[in-house]
Length: 325
Ligand SMILES: Nc1nc2c(ncn2[C@@H]2O[C@H](COP(=O)(O)OP(=O)(O)OP(=O)(O)O)[C@@H](O)[C@H]2O)c(=O)[nH]1
Ligand SMILES: [Mg+2]
Image (cartoon, rainbow, N blue to C red; front, side, top):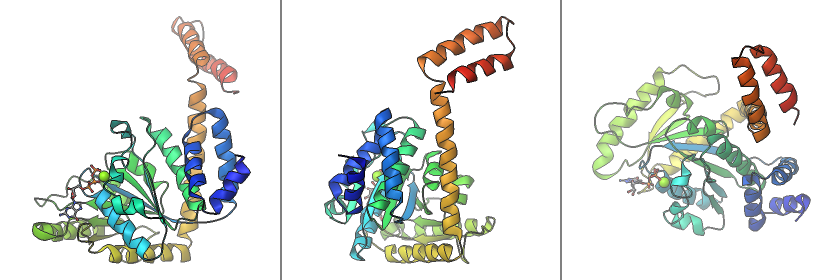
């Protein structure tokens, strides 16, 4: 199928075309990369925008349960929902949401939902690019909300935040009074903290955890992209489906405010620049990783070590012969 036709089908809401396009952007073959780039340019022309919500949380906090319940609630409001994952370690089970499709049983059966596991790859840069492009494809396909899940284990949050309009941190009620060792950097990224499992015996602990985090958020430096009262901490129970509509209301409020005040477009522009920079860097590094480049590097290294060549001239020679493409 030609890129043009594939693009048209996606814009018309054809699910098979959507799945096919995502397979295309996930491929690392050079000819597929070129096709994917052409497709993304074609799709961008449609100018559709979704609300992209990054969702992070440590294993077991209830991400899958939350996504299922929250997704179903959004569908009940007449919205179309896509769920993607960024998980550099997804090789462990061949995709973090893959096994989860069973856990997201209701959502995966909905016509208005689309669930895609993380591309399996061990390298975060590769996963990031594929997920970001999958986000763009889903956006063009007319999804209203795109949930981008990541397991909170370090660097992947930054990557997800760079492809999201809102960043939501999901936490579980803490046993003690400690702030669960959530890294400051991750706290600073959050627009909304949701303390999940606010039900049954866990309710009192959830209430305490929520007010602890509300306090911690108030201590952070005020960010220009936030209206009064943000970032904020709220309680939800994915199980009992409590607090989900309220959380969505707050998200909508934040989205509207940022759109009206120019922060939405500015953020998307900054993100585009961030990814442009990443693409250039990765492409340069890839050129230095070819067998020929590695061999040249080894040869030049020997000469530098032997004192025959200055490091700067060796580098110059390396770059002039191996970065040309
Ligand atoms: N009490 C209570 N338990 C919940 C709630 N949400 C999820 N759980 C339970 O917490 C456990 C983990 O839930 P998951 O949704 O699988 O958590 P996850 O964050 O997706 O976990 P990973 O995929 O391993 O990263 C399960 O036993 C859920 O039933 C909730 O709102 N209340
Ligand atoms: Mg899960």
